[in-house]
Image 1 (cartoon, rainbow, N blue to C red):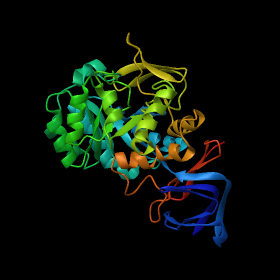
Image 2 (cartoon, rainbow, N blue to C red):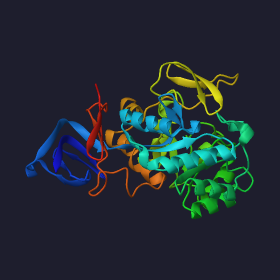
Image 3 (cartoon, rainbow, N blue to C red):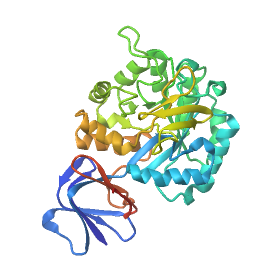
Length: 385
């Protein structure tokens, strides 16, 4: 048994100043103890730091030169190890649009190797496509776009051995409502994005069971005062979650602030949309089958559109950005990268909170929200230099 001493703990639905957090010999969280209950045993001294749950990145394509679309178990493990540098302890490997067979093979590779990944824990698989629309394709390969097909989803889910947790669709595509109903009944989270949908089309999918908007503002029909579009739907439909990429390139800080004020942190989840150039030097990379250029902290397609093509954002930096931009409190910023993504992707029973009995996956932050250390199952796996 050991204990973590800290200046602040981000606990479920509250923060506590000072005290101790019990870590069992099995690598699980135990009780929180106040300063007056000083325990006897090994104490990890973070008395000038803050303790938060490990971050959860539910929308990430790659890192350190590797891409989920490479369909390479070794590369996936390199991503999982690298994510510990970002404070991430759980993640959803996220595909871009590809062929039916390619996506099936990726599902098989992840499912067959899930127990072998040694870094941040693979909590499932996220499909960004292929049921998207060309007008707002972003950095997706539109030659693979098609109408939603639940039988195809079932085929991928079988290959994934039940690990396929969520999928993004465009609400205006034929059969989107019926697909949403069937997917939700099967336990898959349906997200809406890469879409030219009207407010009414988006609303119909939400009423059918869709719960999340994919990287809100980006690659979707904008808000107009007479035609609300996808952005208006994301903002105004109650109880619906909205992804947000807070790198300063995808969304202006004040636009991020507006969304957070409207939705509240319990319905805004920070994602990175990071691709293979994350934690790498500037240069040319690939996102799926599409060549991109990473320069000055942004990734863009090499073609004539120069569309943003994912990001090189780290989730701990997204959390810090909200704090530095003065648009969220530390508690709110942490919530949007832990509890909210856990709820959005159906992971709330085992990740996203410091609760007794759960795996002791947590991070250490300084008072300026800089990442100091990452712990997995109670063991330190990353220490900032």
